[in-house]
Image (cartoon, rainbow, N blue to C red):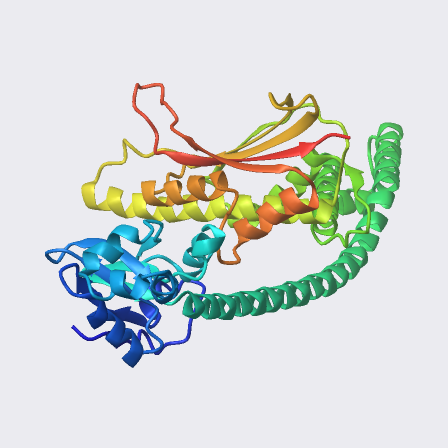
Length: 448
């Protein structure tokens, strides 16, 4: 059978391109054929990289054009290898060919080809296909490899440019929000600073009114009319409560603004010590509007020392993980509600819950102390998603696409020298049943 060149795919190569997208040669010869017949085919097709040996349509070996020329240059090589069947040539040919499936990625195939011994680096690669065996010229593979490397470099460059643009946007947004937070904080501080004086003034005025009532038990008609108009007894009882409500609102607004400032904090060159428990509280306060009354927040905070970190970036990580839990719980709550309405059974409903745990720990492989932050929920995820998460983090390659988890992973590991782990959790209920499988994310930060 004369050699056939399979052109391959006409689409542009990508990072996921495989060997079946490259030009492949289909040329095989039975061991019973004479060597001179194969040599004529090589003479007619100067680009043919080699030949596949078959015996009764079964693969038995391969020889490259370069190896054939080396054998013919040996003493009596022409008489020995051209006038006799190919079985003789096959017995001399080395058994060091590289055989790969046609679904092997070009990047992986190029790396395996480079790992061969120096004398085999120029040999073609045997590509196994469902329809048989084909030959791939190693030079074609190398060209495709470097094309993809160029694409990969361009993708990395574009991703870096996108990250720089996103960072600049976030920095601009952070400066804007920080300015707005300052503008909010100024009147809040004014209210907060004067509340104590207003409280003292009101108490003094109420005391003065009480003294007047004691001295003048029988007020004049005009004073009695004013007392009835302003409802003095109700005012005396409600004024302290009103001031307490204003104080509570100002305190809450102050905490919200501080949390917003921490989240939009423009980090400096060096990390600064921060209270991670307060950082978590600030993020939870910012997310309070997204959490329905059905979602329960359980906090198990340990006694943590100030941790040197970039508090703005850590706040972003906490925001990403908590938002992911909230989204999952809200989606499950909608599903449970629809299921309950269809079955009229609400007895099996489990209250959505997010658990945040902080603690100090020491890892087995290191004597260094670490701060552990664990965020989990009982929302439950599919086994496929759970397997993808665990496998990605176990291989130290979170995701190929840029996601919130990718950003969080990079902030923890690259920016803070920490560890980002994911675990599968099954929670047992008191009734002997088990809650849905959930995922727990653990952040480990070194303590200086």
